[in-house]
Image (cartoon, rainbow, N blue to C red; front, side):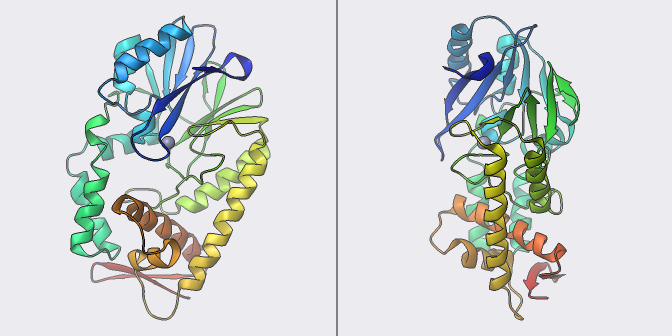
Length: 311
Ligand SMILES: [Zn+2]
């Protein structure tokens, strides 16, 4: 556990896949700690949290989940059992959490969707198999307290940060942004199009980055990696990164229809394991959908296949 600015504690938890760790944060408050994010629900999650919380001392007043990805929501039920504290989660985010993790038919829906995006049969099974790896380690808290952006949790204002996840919420107070995976220092947060996600996640993300630039926090505490000393500067870099990716995606388009699967090779190369390909397809599609809205690409959907061409 590390002590950061303003009495905030950071707990770093193991993550079996890249980037190998995830941070949770303990925010001090009058009623006790607000614990932000929980790590994956690994078999020893409760034990490790018992040790961490003993080290922090005091009681946990609230468990706050920024978004429903496994490394953030995975142990929320464990933490509720351990602390008795209410779990607080964004309303849209919780709806997506249930749709993905509380739904045995989700894998089939993903298979159909990857097929629609042009992935060949054998490949879709592999892609979806990869996504099931975390399923046993997600013990999310049912029926949490639902909140919306603009509300406050123990004096922290909730800021909508869609893109990486549609319903992701950050917390802001006194120039400190608890940023979850909205801003990361060295890694670029993935922004993908998924079944049942909002239609233009990259558009959402670019707007959320503009909002971060306007808010201009002094420091951002991300879900992975070191604190970010110049959050607005980092937001500008991420905008630039996506502008370049958008240009590359536009260059890859031609008169011949290509699927998101095919175009993911032009953008991300051919040498990717299944998990990497899954994100590459989703990420390629978020760029293509942005280009469609900018008038720089055309989408055609027929015969159970979605393809894209130059306009
Ligand atoms: Zn994360």
